[in-house]
Length: 426
Image (cartoon, rainbow, N blue to C red; front, side, top):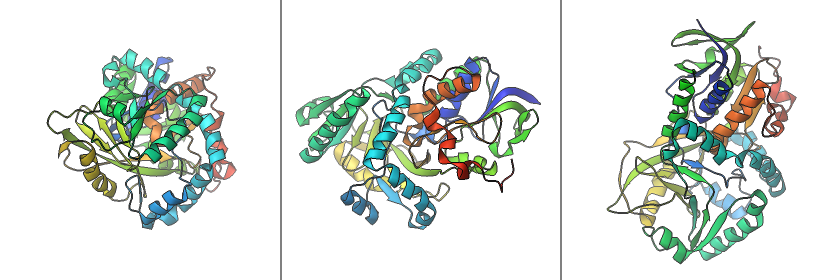
């Protein structure tokens, strides 16, 4: 029988960071996952620590964009028509929270987390001896037309200074000097200078895991659905035998609702799926920064494995069959922009981003259970906010003064219906 103060369920970047911060605070922690660590979304993301990402990705309100998405032919968004009836309640609430005034109010809360993302990653990476994964050249948002470039330059000047975000505005010549192997078809770029790019996101996550284990933490395989409440706290089955813990943290990302629904919570969660593929750069071509082809809707990032092409959001049921349509649409356009050689993966990778309709993660104490905590729903910024979430929840659980006000991220914000399903057992 294993015993610990706390069990953390889910070994993605959020779960690893929570477990590490709790272990640093003299709690005995067991981290549990059904697979290896950082093998799901924490493996396949674009590798950005997005200090500029103060506005979480909203639902577009531009009618021309909505018209394009309705045709289901774009790269940045794709949907399964059969999933829409199930997704409609979530999408409706997501659209409402994305209206400009409400989106700005969301950003003011969200920025309190985002502003610490680089410093918190730096702290853990320094302790883990993992700063070699981190590149400090920022990233580029590319524009194909002067009209789009000038619109986005004006938007940045209007919005980003409020949040202390630094950026440079590049014309076509300045961009070509920074990225000489991009095709000369671009009108310019926004260069976000604060973000950090990571050339092996899983490698960084595993470095954090090794630091956790060096401090006495334990990582085991097990099924989170075996978690049960008992008089002493919580118990579950693992590959190394039964485990009991005084407290439990749910950090299961896109699978969080599978467990929380069984515990009586009806939290409004959905997923945005995404795909990636790696390529060899042709000849002597080099990509110096991660780049977003803004008007086409795909991302290229230089990784240790090769150039990683990642797609936008696919709205589908989490466990539906893979449909890498966006990847197929993006690849020929990306090849025209940058000289990509052969594919390096045998098949497209797919991951799922756990999302809430108000675009804020769920971080805090579970309302109906003693010693149960939530840390999920980070959408596109799980990798960005893993260490921030780890520190915040570590401080909350151990009774320290939180370095960020946790109230906006509480599960209680969704109301009684979401947190009190009386027909479910406790």
